[in-house]
Amino acid sequence: MKLFVLGATGKTGGVLVAQAIARGHSVTTFGRSPFAGADKAKVLSISGNPMNEAELADALPGHDAVLSVLGTRGLGATSVLVDSSRATIAAMRKAGVRRLVILSSALLDSHIGLVNRIVSRTILRHFSSDQRAMEQLVTASDLDWTVLRPARMTGSAPDGQSTSVLYDPPSEAGMQITKEEVARVMLDTVENQRHLRELVHVRGARR
Ligand SMILES: NC(=O)c1ccc[n+]([C@@H]2O[C@H](COP(=O)([O-])OP(=O)(O)OC[C@H]3O[C@@H](n4cnc5c(N)ncnc54)[C@H](OP(=O)(O)O)[C@@H]3O)[C@@H](O)[C@H]2O)c1
Image (cartoon, rainbow, N blue to C red; front, side):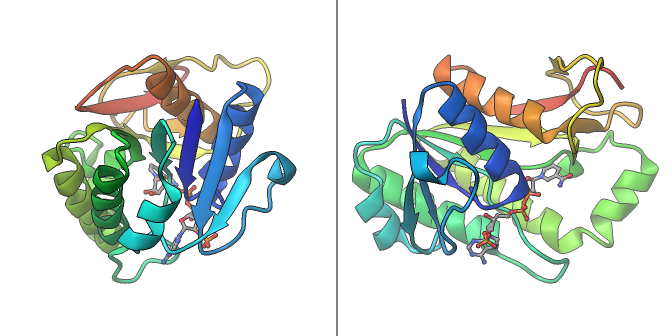
């Protein structure tokens, strides 16, 4: 498939691009910084603003799907996710690209335990409200969207641990997932046309 990745220069983005290349996909990265990961020679890296509809619409034609793992750096007020999703939705409609798989977060769930709920409403409140606004735009769109709400993302699983995931809402006891697992779920979702117009919860199975 021809995949268009937003947020490729981030922590999850690097893992996602590596897995996509390993699966034989053709990958275009689009962002304000050029993609500099290990696979940089194997991707088409386009410099552009993910909040700019016209720049996105120029770059999108010919792609099969958009995978967005954009995130916000820092804890202050932000509208990166909602602004980029607004531009992306409009640009995808213009370019005739219908499939969007986008990352949100389990922070928006109610059954994540008291401590996580407090964190979501205090330290991470700007982050959560941007994610909520992004979800509202995406789920109201007429695209073939999937919104993934992963649990807290960690580094790689230690050797010997299962890497299966559960498509369950998170609970206090199961609030983690690795970036590798999240990337795998995103690619499985887009390759197999799964979870069309669904909001999907994922968490690591071993915890
Ligand atoms: N961390 C967790 O535990 C967790 C859990 C669940 C869900 N998530 C979600 O996963 C997503 C990705 O997380 P991550 O840790 O991989 O993110 P990250 O490493 O912070 O990467 C963020 C990406 O977004 C881009 N970006 C940020 N601000 C931008 C701006 N103003 N304009 C253009 N591009 C911008 C960055 O580009 P530059 O390289 O140019 O800065 C980078 O590619 C986030 O949306 C987060 O909500 C995270």
